[in-house]
Length: 141
Image (tube, rainbow, N blue to C red; front, side):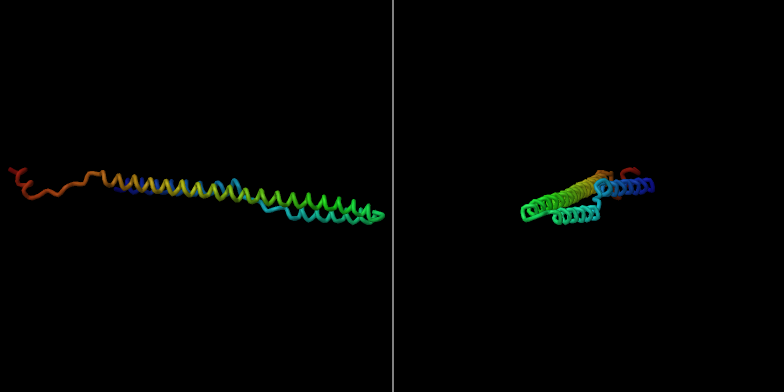
C-alpha cells in the first residue's frame, strides 16, 4: 500500500514539475524587453536640432520648404521605427500567449489522461467477493 502511495506521489511530483516547466519555458524564451524610449528621445532631439540648424541657415521660403521636407522625412522614419518596435513587442506577446495556452492545454490533457487511467485501473482491479455461509459449509464438507 505504501509503495502505491509513493508511486502516486512521485507521479504527481513529476507531472507538476513538467507542468511548471511547460508554463515557464515560453515566458523565459520569449520574454519581451522594454522599448528603448531613451534611444528614441535622443533621435528625436537630434532630428529637431538638425532641423533648427538647417532652418536657420535657409534663406527664403523655398529653402525652408526643403528643410521642412527633410525634417518631415526624418520624423516619419523615427515614427516608423517606433511602430515597428511596438509591432515586434505585440508579436512576442501573441507568441507567449499561444505558447502558454498550448502548454496549459497539454497539462490539462495529461491530468485528464492520468485521471482516466487511474479510474480504469481501479475498476479492473480484482475485488474479492464476499463468501456466503453456504459456500463455507460446502468447502468444509
